[in-house]
Image (cartoon, rainbow, N blue to C red; front, side, top):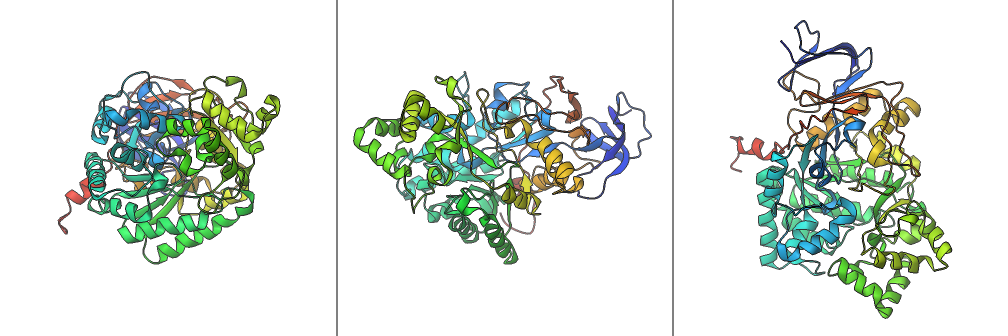
Length: 540
């Protein structure tokens, strides 16, 4: 007897092949039948012609702490997501050392958030072990994050790593890879990641080929420096011989719109040379990050506390203001390319009355210069401010979405309050409502592939992402005519419509928006290391 049968569904199996009518059978958390099921079952769901797919994979999020803070966490489950990949952009809560714990927490809190309890880990291996033992509501996999590595070993020093420091970072990276991490994520836009030269990254990446590890990168510049930044990471991947994944490919700033096609051409040329390169994209024309990323890189040396001291100092404050108000050659000044009217404050602790408003609008109310307004808010909020900023072309976003080398992600931050980017609550329903049913940018089958089998293949997440016998029974059932994101920039904290069921490892978890509190998620270790360990044709 089976545990569950889903009957009368329009099955989209994740391969990209056309949908077909059929049933799916599940036993002990594993798919046993796809197509015809003639075995009795303890439970039956009549899909009534709705779409039955593998559970969606959010291949790039910042839910590293959210998944542990609440075993009933369901922001992504409500969208049909059954697996999240964390540790992105060089930002993660591990590894850390006690004497630099404050530095790391100040660095990641605006993106990942914090916990009301002390972290029971220090290494990536220990963090993965905590995930393995937790009552997770969904599946989770992680990278080793370069920013956390560098802070643990070097703090926020803006200098090259010494030989001893490099060996320490390589040791910590290898430890994480052995524990089942996907690879290394780097955030070259963020300090201290931006302080690392490309040669330093190549040396660190020398660890990855031993484990077939993936290099994922938030590139150094997404505005005026988009093309040089893409060339840089391709150079890094080519020199180190690793597979490369470019995070949230975009062209920021109106003067750069259209350059995503040049970036795509660079990647296609590299692939033609035999390089393994892909990217991801979120289906929105606004981004989200921290307010401190708009400041000059030098102002963040030493960490957030030192940055705030520089803002308090009259002379360094004036230098910051001068540089923020002008185009820069060695870093992308997103303020100049975007404008303060397009920088929206999304999360604040003290000045919550300003959430959802632009820096320009706030400055007018306060009777201040926009830069002074931003700097004063950073002081009042201890540097912990999230922003949404409108800086992309919808045409560019569409081009990347329909490119066959891109997968779809949320890039959602760990914000639980305020006015977070609507991608946190609406990414995956929006993909199907806007880009499949509405604008017909993608076929239904291709959209499903981009959020199921493709990310599983890319991140080596084992037998997930396909509706096939022997695969984990992570499934999503949705009404094609009704699926829709309700989250918007003014009122983002809204669950979507049209998701009927979400099943995690064979257990019903969401039923018509109702959280069943099953907590049946798993820590998913990448299969890359295990595949190489069992290989008889080499000596890795």
